[in-house]
Length: 339
Image (cartoon, rainbow, N blue to C red; front, side, top):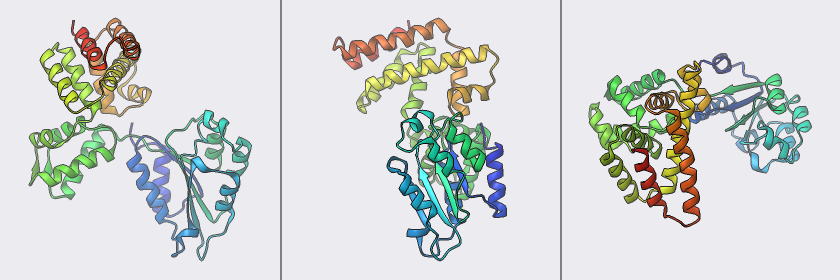
């Protein structure tokens, strides 16, 4: 997935020509880019030194019709326009909207009547495109999805960021860095900042190996790769290191099961003619993560994966019933996988 969707391109054109509307929904996986565009939109509305009146940020957990109406209907002070941002309202998820104290009828009517002097932006983590409020907003404003950038775009971004900071990094090294980070530019940026401080003129793979902290999600792939090779020594070393770092064995067991589940889904999707992008979309993961699941799916048969997913549930029950401690359960499970 990349940022080439219609709504994102339209938003960029509106910003460039300074012809923005007054109602938006920002959502999607790529939080860094979403936050960047929120800031750009904020800068388009001068507060004229009256930010308390012309910049209103509402928390979705504490919304009432009175607060919303007051924020939207009160005039800006000494300015032509005011900004209102509502974060994590949950109204675009069917279940949350139905359980909300604010009725769907209220939102449907309210979204039709946003004053011209207001720029209202909903900043959401999750949405349901089938919800009434989503359809209403799309009709009266613009919903903009911020997707994970493609692998190609991310590698190019890493190279550009290195250049901005007076460093060089090869395409291979950039791809290697990408493989060691959780999805999202924020995670990449944090690791790049550490590398900029550590390296001199060029960033090499050896530097990345020394400096970059592998998140547990990446370590789980290392365990999976070692299981494929039946490399018990590597598996044991990884598990002992995680134990020394006081990582929860229960969490590792859960993540291994989740990994097997996604590998199984990738396998079934590919067998039914899905593309890499389709797998990434269905599993809701970054493209380079989807490639890992697809590569792993070629090494396991479906029966093995189904068995191990069900075995995790069995070990989970044994741990909760006190029949076995969590680290013993994890060790047994992992070595069963190599038989």
